[in-house]
Length: 489
Ligand code: BES
Ligand code: MN
Ligand code: ZN
Image 1 (cartoon, rainbow, N blue to C red):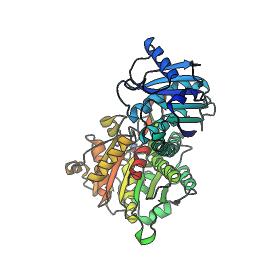
Image 2 (tube, rainbow, N blue to C red):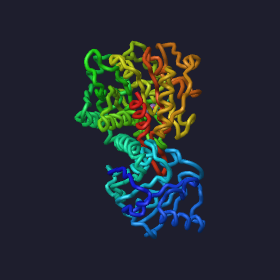
Image 3 (cartoon, rainbow, N blue to C red):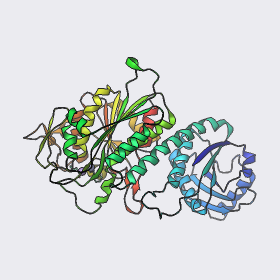
Image 4 (cartoon, rainbow, N blue to C red):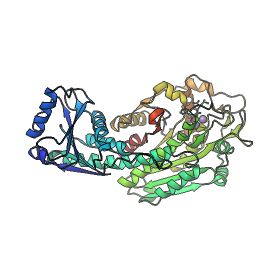
């Protein structure tokens, strides 16, 4: 899809040529300084009682009088003053839902209020959401919306900010799309090898290098914990290393990278501690952390920012078989710490811990792991906010703020030493589970033992990485949050 900023004088708005013009209105500024034809139409629908001043409400007019555009959607973005980026995203989403199946190819979006970069980014996010359709294993899926072009109409003074937000939005949308596509592919398509191939494809883009470690390499490194999870599966494991080097200084003066670690369990049966059958299909989404790392690299390729980023993806299946790791088995992690595998379904932390140890070699400025780690996090936070855990105050605050700005919010969870008690084992340095209470926190406490002196944060995206039910599918989160964080550095 193509996005464009159009700086247009208010008296020319009626001349906007488009299959649909989407006009976002706020009650306070609805009739100020806009084209008389538009103003007349708005007054008519409001007087007729067809449009209430409630955010999310919209009305579709066919062949609107006095306008060149074939259709006009008036969408309420705010019942009062200027609308937030979040409200703009929702209003554009609602308006596009009205017109996208009508065969419209070109829509113009007119913000009836000042447009900053966050607004422009929100418009792009809403539009790319509206046109994404999973088809890879469903060729019979309904025709994708034909929407191919979106023009964002702003006043001349706001064109520069709008263009910046639009460019960022387009790059993020590419990353989100890749993350969704990987997440949605079934586990017999999206294997560890598939993730490695996607990473290698990214490695052909500017500034990105990709290296894939095989089982033998992981054995040499002593990744006993990751290997233990992978050993029950016929699918070969992959440990993917991506590097984006965009900072100008090279060699010894090189900028310390941010390391992103994504959980890449391409299917989680639970292993010997097998999961119940209902909804087990959704465990194909257990690689959404990995997918978000690939998505971020896709965005970096687009934006080419001046910074260094490393992506690490331990990828394997978690399967029950004659050679699976068993409850009670003790494994030795790359860090040297031993782990009693009390529950083979707590496999995410077992693959992440070795990746965290591997991350040390990059002398990182910060390490962020992203994982669909615990059902407990879904119970705690639901499907709106990702769980954020960090031992570093500044890093935690930065990630929280970026989540708000990216409309991809997180919520901080605690990491008090007291929670560590639950991980005690009589047979190893620690167990891999801590009981039902505070399950998302004890999982994070386990990871903390491997983060050592790193500036580290953990995002539990179990509730936010995909949707269940009729809308089942990957969301691409938290690509927007992560990109905003990287760009804020
Ligand atoms: N991938 C799951 C977490 C999960 C479950 C995410 C359901 C989203 C929905 C993870 O590997 C897992 O199985 N965690 C266990 C941990 C438990 C055994 C301590 C869980 O959450 O039940
Ligand atoms: Mn599991
Ligand atoms: Zn899992």
